[in-house]
Image (cartoon, rainbow, N blue to C red; front, side):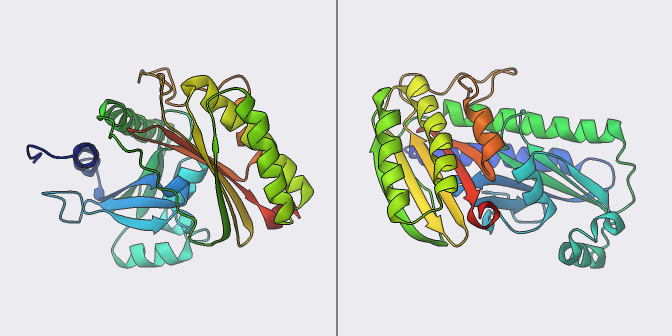
Length: 306
């Protein structure tokens, strides 16, 4: 229930809860499904907000946070955007610990699908079946469509939410040993200035030159995208952790920077080759879209690059 005088943040949380609750109810009605889990990306893509149909979600969805890099099917589909489906026997070599737990609970098959309209996933959902499934093209297509519909509903919820008076930035780097924050203004010159500042920073941190070059190329594309679509300042965070370099660009969504939700427009439009280049060069990337603006993050694995 939405109480009079609730803040915009509370309204948005309740809206997202309702979307997630409806999705779990609908998915639980699918044949042979005994349990449903839904996860949404948070914290610059480093964690997921997760809930399941067997929790007490009557008043508010019972969410918890999980590490987005845990090796489970749901996290795999969020990172890759590709479905993971199969019997417990088929999935056991890839996910032995999860399969062992689910087999004890009587699960015969598992399907994990991205919550996405074709771009980076907003999250994912997972179904647990008590009988074997064919997982033919028709069934997988139908499950993929459920993910698209859920992404559309979440996107519309995020875009219609009132804007708070104070921007909220929530990007966590729990394993980071060095973090730097700087601001890029909303003018085209910000791209070059930000690139030079970050280059100096990475040199001071003794980041491998090839890794730094890749990071700067990706950063340029993301900041360019923010300037073009918002014309407002962005917050840039650079985090160097154990084996990873993470860069996050948080825009303020001003000037109509987030396009209206339609069936054929991704919530974060690509200017030219921009985010396609990030997709090709980064180890992982994604975005969080909310009532304030857009957070785009990308990760470079240092060990793989060395």
